[in-house]
Amino acid sequence: MMPRRSTLALALSLACLGPTAAQPAPSGEAKVTLAYAHPLPNVPGKSLKAVLVEYAPGGASPAHRHAASAFICATVLEGAIRSQVNDGPATVYRAGESFTESPGDRHVVSENASATQPARLLAVFVVDTAEEVLTLPDRP
Image: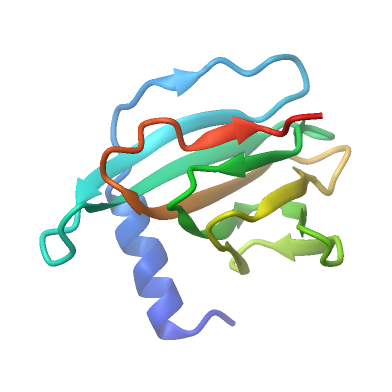
C-alpha cells in the first residue's frame, strides 16, 4: 500500500497532466511526453517539470543522463519498470513504487520489465528553470 503522502503527490502530479507535445519514439523506445513545467515561486531559478514515459511491451530507453541540475523522482503508474542507476543493482519497480536520480547520475537501464504488458512512469524533475533539454543520450 502506498503511503498517503505519496498517493497525494501522485494524484496532484496526474491532475497537472494536460495537452502536451510528445517526442517521437524510435521503434522499441519509450514515448516521452512533457506533462507540465511550473516555476517554483519559493525557489528562484528552479522549476518542477514532469514527463510521462510510456513503454510498449519489451520497450526500453537507451542509457542516458539528465540535465546537470536535475533531481528526479520517478513513480511507476502502470506495469513494471526495470531501472539501474550508476553501478547500483538493476531493480524492478511496480505500479505505485518510486525511485530517485540525483544530479549527475547515469541511468544505465530503463526498460519495461514485461514483454507482454505496457508500462508507464511519471518522472518529476526539480531542475534549473533555464534547462530545456531534460534527457541527454549517453556518450559511448
